[in-house]
Image (cartoon, rainbow, N blue to C red; front, side):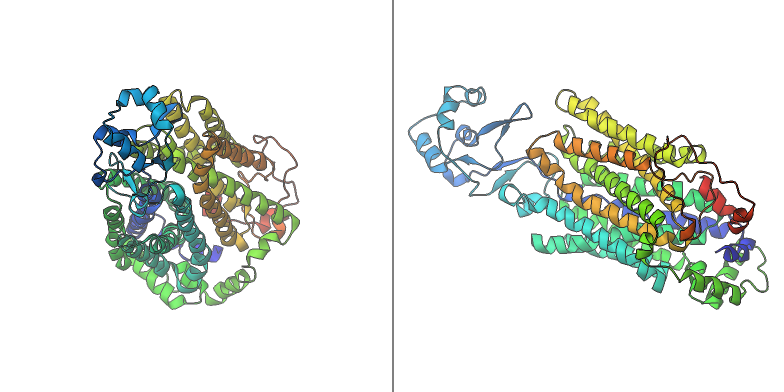
Length: 571
């Protein structure tokens, strides 16, 4: 809306009003970042084995011998889901036998004797290790062995909540405003984080967890959109591409620290509600989007808000800020095409949209699959997760620097290819060298996340103005489909421990291949209509930018762009 940008240019781009909005909106991303991957710690699976009741009257040696020993990953481990028949073990103990633990672990004759006994399930429950966690959802509701399928299903409900939150938040925001949706999502995060802590059963927990997922993604999207509409020029670019993601990542880094200090999952859930409650008073400090008010024909409210901002910035507002006739005309033109079906209207936009959906899905399966597969690595889970999240900070910085001077396809392909190769090399070092394995995981996370950061800009620049919001929302929906699939990747380790890493690496390579065929947008003006969509590339090297088409000057006149839009395209 070029007339709007010109009408509010008297405010400037970096006054006291913008500084306040910039800071507070960055802080509102903390609740969403803090809750992003809480599923990892709430659903952590401690090492466990069958419980031997105290009334069985067995000595400590016989209790240890009652659990079969099996080899997993080249290391001896106690069975998690079976034990030798307790009645037989009690009979052997009653006749005066006394096994030695070193005989059993060294596969001596004593173990041969024990291994000849029949096995049974964990009829008396399980004993869970408290080395890292005092209690988790898994240990409290016994989501192991025959009920292990409930673990990925719980994660699936969380990400499905994000899918539906992404689907409806944009429509609600367009109708009722950006600010109510933002603070409604923050309130929902606090409410359902607290409610989850009192869940009496697993079915109640997943229902509340679904609602928690809806609030998490809605919180970030609403803050992103509101900041993009309240801020202008270079301030908007820095906010949306650098500062907001940085604060979001820092909030995510706080989660493993909190989980380390609060080892009970119920107490952790209550702690997750605190950032949202702290942000609720911002309701009286963050204004509604004047741009949205204008789009709804509420010019008087928009002018009142802008005049208040002018007083805050100590600048003089013009006597008449908006010309209602021009704004109404632009609004009516914009409403003509808002359906998701318009993304499939012509061959050009249909091909680009389908390829973007594939890339968003593949990269997010890899991104969240990496996080869930951290449990397969040795070492302290809190430190591993902290490092995996901290690597996002240089990834965002690298993507921002690359977007300033490199073509979009080259940046996206290079970062994603780096991540894919690192993930495929993990199968060489997974068992032999844990330190190198962790380094490769961090390098893979760096590459994939930097590729996703470039993909945000790439998708925005490939989408026509008339349906840009719809295109971004549909891509985010497919990203949530990918994150919903990711919890099941860990279950594939039953067939082969390398299989999850191979899949995430291959999906990243698929994204690289598809990205080769996307049109280049670097230093090109933003397209406004579906008819201006460029065709897909049959095959071009990523560093070969498409030169701007030669014409008689008509196209340049038709695509007159505001200065801040050109800045967004280049950054």
